[in-house]
Every structure is written in structure tokens, then in C-alpha cells.
Image (cartoon, rainbow, N blue to C red):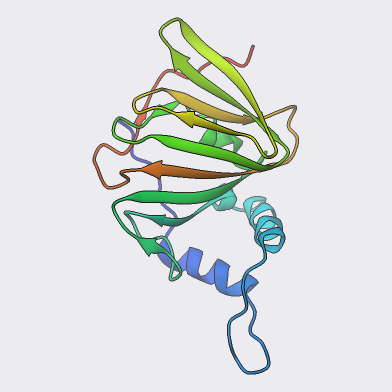
Length: 168
């Protein structure tokens, strides 16, 4: 089993602080999705680990993080997240739900007879069962944004690397 490299807490905190704003009274304003996505894509040009960001889960990621052992929630941008998301992995204790917010992605899911391609377009979703090997790729290297939700993020092992599916 290969452990995933985690971006340090402070790096994520600094990133979110840099893209947030306050009103005249000093109250923090809601972060707009398009502003977050644009900032993630820009930051990922210099640091690939910034291509996905968690907002909830078992390991605190930044000051606005909802720490819990029930679910993990994150957002990823493509093609910037291709290197990490393209690694085939399985979550033995987690079910994963992916919804595409913009563009389209290719999700390869392991079955008894190999891998099956699923093209998931904006507004569509896919559920990946516990223990199913899977990887995510951009379609034709085009831009996409997707949200992912995983159950049971605190149960170890969280993920295991499996054989990488081919792109043919």
C-alpha cells in the first residue's frame, strides 16, 4: 500500500486566505466556486498538489475544514489533477460518489473482466463501490471540475494502489 503525500496544513490555509475576501465591516465573504477553481488551476501550474482540495474528512486540511469520520468531501480540477487522479486506487472501506460540475471526465472502474470506461459529463455522476479499483482522467486533455464524496474516511487503509488501467 502506498501512502498519499499530503499537502501541509499551512500551505492550504495560506492558499485559501489568499483567495478569500472580507466586506467593509470585516466579515469574511463566501468563496465563489469559479474563483476557487481558477485559483486552484493557477496554483497547480506551480504545485500539482494544489489540483485537489478537501473540505471535509478525517485529516484536517486547512482552517475551514470539517473534520469528521463519516465522510470526506473535496473538489478537483482537470487536467491539472491528472497525475494524481490517474493513479489506479481502491478504497477498501469507502464508497465514492463523483459529480462533474464542469466539462467531462473519464472514470475507469475495475470489474471482474478488466476496466470499464465511463464518460461522466457536467451534471452527471458516478458511484464507485467499496474496493473497486478506479482512476480519473480528463477527456482529450480538456478542462473539467468535479466534486467527490467518500464514506468512512477514517477507516484504514484509506486507499491502496492497484494496477493502472491503460488509456486505449
